[in-house]
Length: 114
Figure (tube, rainbow, N blue to C red):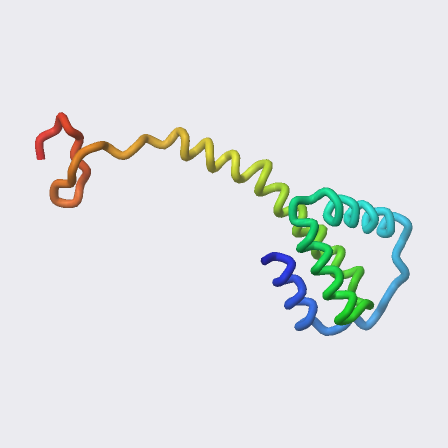
């Protein structure tokens, strides 16, 4: 879903007026992104499909597509490693709802009278 939104955003954005040659650091980052997202990541097939669609649509936008997909990778990993565990811990610590029937919209415990 994220990569589909990136592709839609690229289609709506005007083409940048200037194109600088990528630096050595940007090339290394691009190669690392291709390895991490295209070979290792659990969504690698979606990622490769996304790059293929961008290449076929407008190959000059491929560098921007790689950068946007790289940002998405960080969002995915942050959610998986930080946000999801915190939410699970919060849910585990949450008191369970009381057992029993309902009396006037409130939950009643079995040993409680309505």
